[in-house]
Image 1 (cartoon, rainbow, N blue to C red):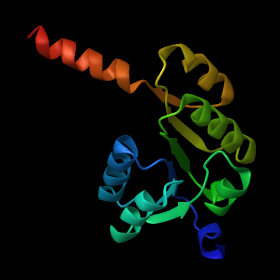
Image 2 (image 1 turned 90 degrees about the vertical axis):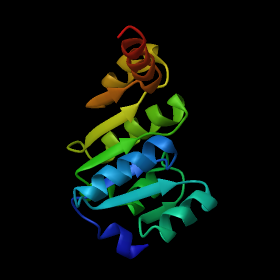
Image 3 (image 1 turned 90 degrees about the horizontal axis):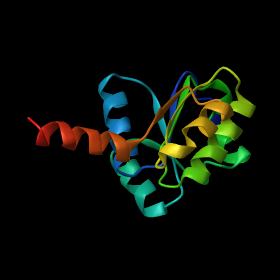
Image 4 (image 1 turned 120 degrees about the vertical axis):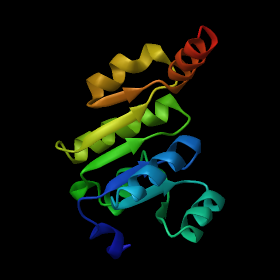
Length: 140
């Protein structure tokens, strides 16, 4: 794991689902160093096969975040499917690195204030965004 700790000025992506995969794709297109934290070994293997640096682990864990280089990371995208895990990850990451930029996913619109209070800089609500986009298309 020592190599991972030496990673600097990178972006950590917590969760390699549909949202995480797209974030990694965009960051890679812009030549940004990316490291994914993914608890599912099968999804982690997909990352490895695609040449993406990946750490199999729990992104809510202080140990895992440190192994991913959170102390030297420029930003973290917290995009797991579970708001409670996302919130705990935001709290933990901000506690470890006060200067890190945090973007997170909030599946429930009502929890956005909690994410802000925890230190998230940007909060996206995919369900609301999708609904808004579909509505705009329907009324055209």
